[in-house]
Length: 409
Image 1: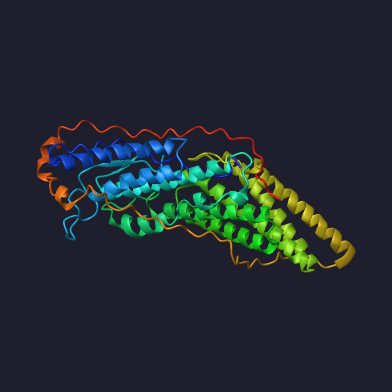
Image 2: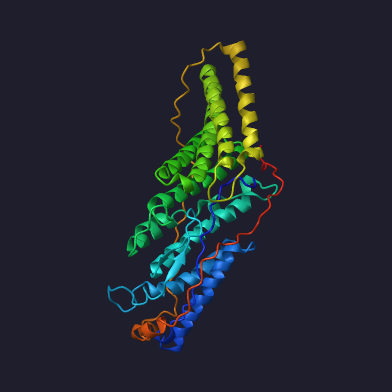
């Protein structure tokens, strides 16, 4: 299943030293600054470390976020903004905007940007996991595919992004359309694991059809979320979402046809399988269009995967069976219109896992906080060296292993 998922590039960021010269007025305050610098650097290293796993990523994320919150949360017992929130400038690129960064002098901007990258890392880790040779889907949990998608509606959209002094520009990662598309896509991809497991474990056709139908709807919703973005940087991503939508609609009609045949509705079953053929053909066309469309991100190759190819054979064989039985047994008229899919999965739907920020670091006490003196920083700021440019993230070059199509019964 290597190259089954489209992945946009990781966000890049400029180095941050957290050197506040005379502002940090105590050894404990200096230690917080030093620890912020080292934990941030380690977290950034983990994004491109091929040996990193979710446990390591969580530990690295918690170490940095527990300290960063000391520059965001109120530590003096008042409702006023943390005095350290606006002391440091942060630069981040966006996943769809190339290497042109956005900059804000705001620790909240750093928190949401870094959290976004953590979410992206989980999608890439999940993609690598699915690309392993001889993967057995019944043993593969959909959680890594979920992008911890509860992160965005709660931590980012509902709580922290509204706090930004400068709202996110159109097409940037922190604006609602882009975040929503990532959330929905991640939920759809987590559902894909559930569908593959259901097929492998030979669950009933109606359940598989229902899961496939709901997954197709997720992909359609994600695509519609991006339809008002500039096509220059959204077209490739949208082609991926569209091809996955048609692929899972083909699955839905195929398995719905099996359900109809089992209920002695052979004419309707034939029409459902014909619609599955139509959706599958459109998915094949979209795979070609997707490969030819320029845009950010790695290019997936779904049409070369056994999981994709097997569906084409399954549709053809099931349709042939239905037509044979209709010619010998049922003699049903084939409807002009395809059956209306009103499928709702009763179980098997993926539930998001709640994301919680780690507790504030024990280092960040009101006493230590009181030793930061902003009045001593203005003169030294002028002597700071020029900030470094934002260099693109060199992501690991992962060569796909031989595709086995997973182990699907």
